[in-house]
Image (cartoon, rainbow, N blue to C red; front, side):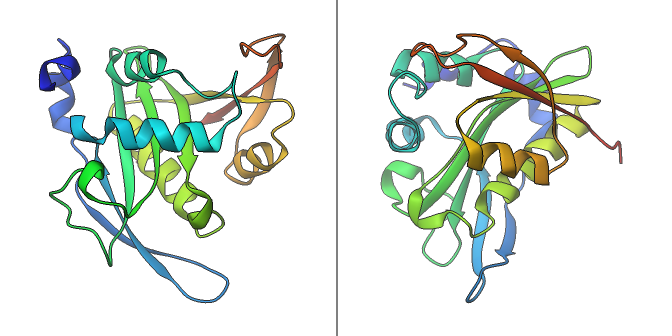
Length: 194
C-alpha cells in the first residue's frame, strides 16, 4: 500500500515535514490538547469515513477522488489527534482519537490550495479546524506560498463564517462546481511570510 502514496515530488517536500505540535485549543469549558501529524498510508480509510460524515453526497469525495488529491504534486495531508489518547507513531487506523484532517498543497508559483478540511462532529468548535488550517498555512508559507485559495459550497454557512474569521475573502463563484449541482464560493487569503 505504501507504493500508492509515492510521488516524484515527495522527496522535495521532506524539507517541509511537519513536526508534532502539542496544542491546547480554546474551548467553552476547558482546553483539549491536540497534536498535528503527517498522514500515513494506513490512515486513509479513517480519513475517507470522516469525509463521508462531514459532507453530503455530491460534495464528499469518493475514495479515488480523495486519494488522487492526497497524492497530487505538492500536496500534503495533516491529521489532528487528541494528545491525551494518541500515540504519535500510530496511524489513524489504530487510533480512534482522530479529530480531523486537512488536505492542501502548494505549487511552484507561490499559490496554495486547501482541498478539504474535515473535523469530526464531537471535536467541532474546539479549535481543531483552526489548528489544522494554521498548520497548513504555515507549511504553505514555508514553501514560499504567497496566497492560498479554497472552495466551499454556497450553502455551507458555517464554513464560510469559519474562513472569514481566518481572513479569507470571497473572490468569485463557480456555478455548478459540485457534482450535485451546488455552486462554490472561491475564497482567497494572502499569506504573511515569516
